[in-house]
Image 1 (tube, one colour):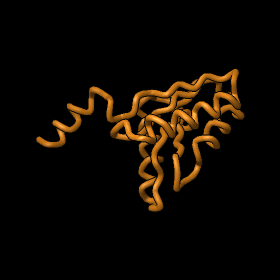
Image 2: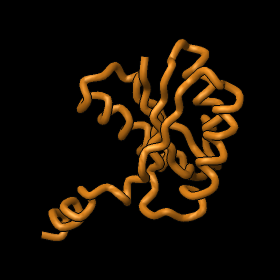
Image 3: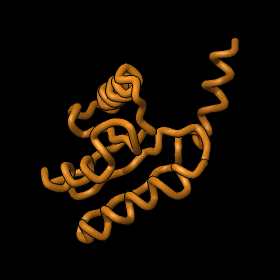
Length: 119
């Protein structure tokens, strides 16, 4: 089975973290997937951590996880931190597949999203 893991920065403000959780639920609905197939993890300041979320996936029989960095630009978190977390998990789970997707700011659809919001 395959799973999507949306990775956000994390916030001290619980409501901000809950926004990401709600987003994951909406993505699952949009993809017509069970809610548990789209999970969230946080780089810092909130739980679950990326390591914990990936461990949970693989302990529950998931064989492949696509990690979506929920970041607008390719800063240090996208270029270094998230890949480092993925590499550590891949070392721990060598028989599993972990794919890092492009961060959301790199999506071609961002142009039309911003344009439609502006109008």
